[in-house]
Image (tube, rainbow, N blue to C red):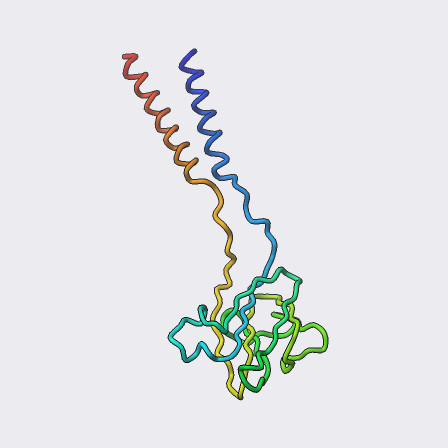
Length: 171
């Protein structure tokens, strides 16, 4: 009877430790879109990666929310905005983004609602700003706790060792 209780308690311990290890809270599922704003072509001639250039900003916008972008008058004569998809191809109005109000791609300031991950590039002095490719995959935090899973595995191995040892001693 003592053996059965010991095995039962060990199984309860294994289940109690291992189930929560894989039941950690997952991301809440809030949908968002990445928006990259490039203010001019400064990153094209530098040795710095475009992702680390000073004129490139990365934003995360909740679905349905807008972001306001403004041209930088210090960069030169503003020629307008160009909007790209994450893969570098040209974005389509109404499919990839919506511009709010009376602003257009030629406006120095516009409020835009991203419908997908987009790159907004400001063009100055008759130079088309080069775009960058953006990783469009969702980034979710890891879930679970591997330490507790390892403890559960050790307890399972100990249970197996105990059963084998008891059978060897019983002979």
